[in-house]
Structure formats: structure tokens, C-alpha cells
Image (cartoon, helix red, strand yellow):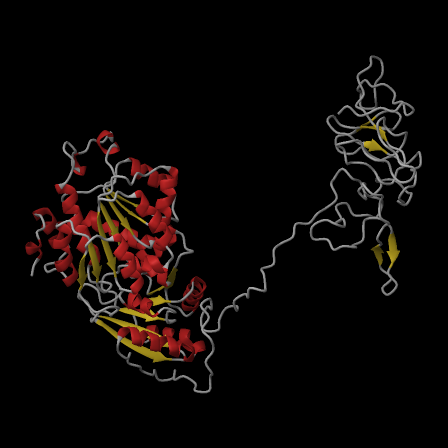
Length: 598
């Protein structure tokens, strides 16, 4: 059967011929006529059998055939964007990964080369504004990942009320990645009258339950038994010790057994670590996973396709959208925790009628995982022992940890009862509090975050009996309602609570924002209330029979070592009277209590 019998237009047949395809794959031959009939579809086929073209080709034809009256084709639109501004989104394709979204949109442009369709991609990891500009330019077909699509919906940059066709590509993977809640939110935004297409490489019971609530009387296309691998992929398992996996992989590459391979690990850390080790072995390698930026992922994939990199190390999530022509080898450096992921991994090779090989490096810890994979496949995977790398029978199996790097490489996972240590901010004495001689400015004070209860305060130095080294001794507690602080710098008297200050105990230098008058008393800066440890209390303060004075209402700053405080007010200018700084100021009267006016 050829593409001519599928009902495609001459423009599409010419685009297919330009790509070198003459006969459709089984899934294409079965799905294209059903999509053209505008029926809902549930399609299952192995990875690499042409599922993307099975829905892109008929959708491009439908968009051209049902274009609204008066709308111009994309190739004839004016450059000023007036015709594009009112073009609604008519087709929405949801994909689990960025790479798969890019691959689908490239197929739209490839098969619509002779009759273009305005399309764009929406995915995370890149800038938001460029995607907004493309949406405003008028995109009829949007390929998106669920998370970033909902971001655009919340920002009001996309309207899904005119969607006519919904496509869920790699639906099984989206459910595995936890996108089901996001997909349900997106479905609530779409019109009820629409055509829905669901494509999946595997058919689990969860997929069937999800499809039953999404599709209306769907046609089913299943060209192969459930969860089967492509027939063109030769599978083999190499037993090896967990600590010698990387050594065996390097041996296979250097000996020519493997010359270009996509290597899978379980974790992102494991992918980075393996790529670095292969580089040290003299093998060009690159890593691709979810923590890489989109530019890094595109660059690594481009270098691998151009044969500038021999090995591309990837994780399961990043590999679902990788489409590489004539990829000869896929290596399972670590077997997947979910057996169905093995089918997706080896589906990267053996595509488009080209033979491929899937190699699995299996240690004693992964024997159970290998058995689970064989149960899913329905047959045994042949096993071969490489000379010089026979596994040691004395090694006992250990639990396979999902977050382990390579075998036992990398740190063990943190348990729930071992929380990650968080840095504690250090609390220091504010700069406006001067310290006594020998006291370091900014020393931690008790009660602050990160300081143990009972830690010594800035104050007296004592001799430690066992070492003879000076240390800070805890000072007595200050009265209730006051904050323990150090005395002013320049004072030679030891700090004692509830003791009056001597008349000559004045700061040796002004504090930040202060200035001295001729009598030596500091003036408080504008907008701040400060009490000087000399003179009577300000009016309105309450002084108990014992202890330190209480600060006025709303002000908590006072010195705990003084029995009588006075508020210093910024003086007004008086003609003929100047301070040391040259400003006019009256003499400060210590006998008259008054408040600071800020």
C-alpha cells in the first residue's frame, strides 16, 4: 500500500516524497484515514513506527480544508500582521518533554512545506516573552508541554476556546510524569465539541481508563501486542560487576563494538558523572537531562546527530523526544525501575526500517529488574559474558536505590529523619551600640538566632582555669523590660547593672549621624530617640524604686547600665552660638528634663 491510497492531497504527497518515504507504516496506514473522517482515535504502536506523521499529515490537510471563509493561507498573509492577529488556536498537541514538542513542530513544518501551517511550540526552560510574541502573531497549531501551557493560560496570553482537535502524544509518559492534574485543567478549558486523538507507545490499564473519559466512541488502532519492542532491535544483556560497568562501556566503545550510542542512566547526577568519566577515558561524551538548560540540551543533541560526540548520556524523561535517524546502539547503563520504560528506551533505535541494537549492562543488584522486563516483553533477553569482565560470584546483591549514581557511586540518599542542614543567619550587635574596650564589635548576643542559651555576652574577660586563655564571662541579667548592651566605647569602668555612670563616661567619638556640642554631650540625629547615660530622666517616664528606668511608650531603646537617662533633642539654631561643627546651637541644660522631638 502506498500513500496515494490514504486520501492525502497532492501537496502532502509531494512533501512525503521529498523525505524519501514511499510506503506508510502500519500505524500510518490505519490511523490517517480515521483522522480524516474526524473520528476520535486511540492508537497504540511501538516507539519509532511513525506515530507523529500518523496525526500530523491528516491534521495539516484538515486545517487547509476547513479554513474559515476569507482567511488567507499562511504563505499569502500580509507582513503587517493584521490577518494573523485574529487567527485562533485550532489544534493543540500536548507532549511530555521539550524534545518531543520540538520534534512534532518540526514535522508540521516539514510536511507543510508546500502549504505552510502557522505553528509554534510552548515549553519550559526558555524565555516567556518570545513565546508570547509568537502566539500573538497568530498560531493555528500549538505544540506544548502541560506546565508551561497553564502558565500562559494564567497570564491570559493564549485562548483555547476555539480548539477543534486535541492530540495527546506519548500519553502514557505524561501520566507517569504526574501530568494528569494539569491535563484535566486543560481539558476544562477546551470546547466539548472537538476531535481527540490519543497516541501511546504502551497500553496500561490506567491509559485505558483515562481514554474512556476523554474519547467519544473512539476507533482503536493497535498494530502490535501490548508493550512489545520493535522487531528490528536486537537485544542483549552483558553481566558485569557494579563497579566495572563504566570500564566495560569504555572497552566496548574503544574496541569498535559500539561506535555511536545513546546511553541511559536512572538519575541526572548519574548522567553527568558517567559523561565526565568517559571524557577522562578519552571518549567524546555529553549529557542531556532535565537540569540542563534548553540551549545546552539542543547543543548536545545537535553535536550527537553531527557525529561530533560519540556517546550521549540521557535520562528516561529527556529521551522520550529524541528522534535520531539511523541510531545504531542504545545502552542501558542502568536498568530502569519501571519495566515499561525499557520499551521506550530501546525504541530510540531500529526506527524507519533500520536495524538497531539494545545493550544492557546488568549487575547482580539488577537481576530482579531484568526479570520484570522479560515478563513485560514476553521472552528472555539473550545474555553474553565479555571476556575479562565476568562477574564475581562472591559479590552479594544490594538494594537498588533510585537516587544512586552508578552502582554504589555517589552519596547514599538522605533519610527522612536526617533533615538537610540550613545555614543559620548570624545575629550581631547593631552598629549604633558601641562596645567596651576588648569587646569585639558585632559579637553574637544571647537569644539571637543561632546562639545557644547561656552563651557569654560582651562584657568582662576572665581567665579559663584549665587553659589560662581569656574568655568572655556571662554578665548578670538586665532588669525586666531592658536589653543587655555593652557600655560606650572609651569608658574604663566595668559594666554593672543598676549602677550609675560616672560623669566623665562619655563617648570618645560621635556615633554614626551624631555631632558634639561644646559641653561634650552628643546630639541625636534627626528622626531618632536616644537616651544619654547622664542627667535626669525625661518627663513622662516611669521609674520604679529599684532597677533601670522604663523607656517611653513606643520606644524600646535605652541603656541598661544607667539609673537616670535624659533625652537629647536636636538643638535649634540660635544666633551667635555655634557648636564645634560650626552650627548654631544653645548650651544643653542637663537640669531641665525634656523629650527628644526627632
